[in-house]
Image 1 (cartoon, rainbow, N blue to C red):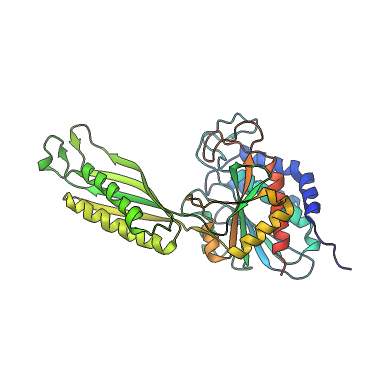
Image 2: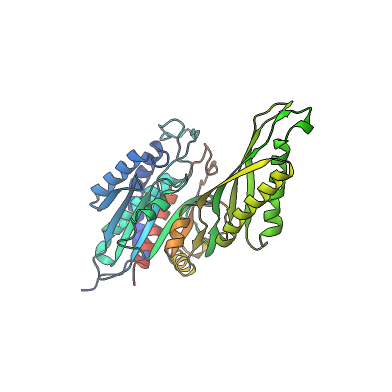
Length: 399
């Protein structure tokens, strides 16, 4: 006898019934945040929920990560992966919530508690429905999204997704400026690559009143910052979004002392991987030649960060169509590109992938921005996020 078709209404009802449990997951995770690659209690807690629902998993992935696996029992299907990150940020929480962080100086200020709670909810729903879909669904609870080299790169390097290898990877992220109950998608380029740029300018320092007897490292560093802006304004095609910004200049001198060394640190963001490599060469060339103009010497250290996020067009369109079926067309929006970076980009360069947003704006009161001490998401969004990812998964896993 053929299995009955899974409908959006059925999953919506199941998600509504599970909502209270998903909120409890999120509140525990929020109250017990852990920094990148130190998510030991987080990992144990997630494992305990998976154990409770008899969902098999492997621990110790990229250190503290978990990959769970659910095999559908109704015919054949694809292997796909769903991903959530687990780590928190070094921020002192100021929300005043009754379940605020119990770990001083550490806070879930980027919604990773919601991501993991939502994926746990989806795991439970998918497990309850597994007699009615075929294929394999992997659930990636990933550590270390917030710091280089990124947990995603380590998972891939370890070969944790080699057997079985997913045909698609799907991820989601909170968006505080979007109303709860809405989601957003963008096909193609979505988020920028993110590299860290460190420059040291060396010279002979001395008394600021006698500049003819020294190499002005401060002046050289200033010109380096200005000259490097030519890369964005004159070298990179205007059609390629690019940002090169410097947020740290350290010259340990005084009003009358020019130091021997000045340190500069900044960020490089772009939407094109070929130009990303070219820009790094331009940074080294312009920095060195500018320093030499002032009889100084420069060291350039560019730490490779996350690659750009590229959403597979076919998969993203399919997911957006499924979201419209689940939520209604009025609750599915087109997203703009973002110059922020995400280590989900690693998955998008290995597998056809899509990374979408779900709204968490409070109906009343302040939501706050990501990476701030007052970020306070609307928990009602967890019903949407868990249910929608389940709906996308059961339809994407089909051949």
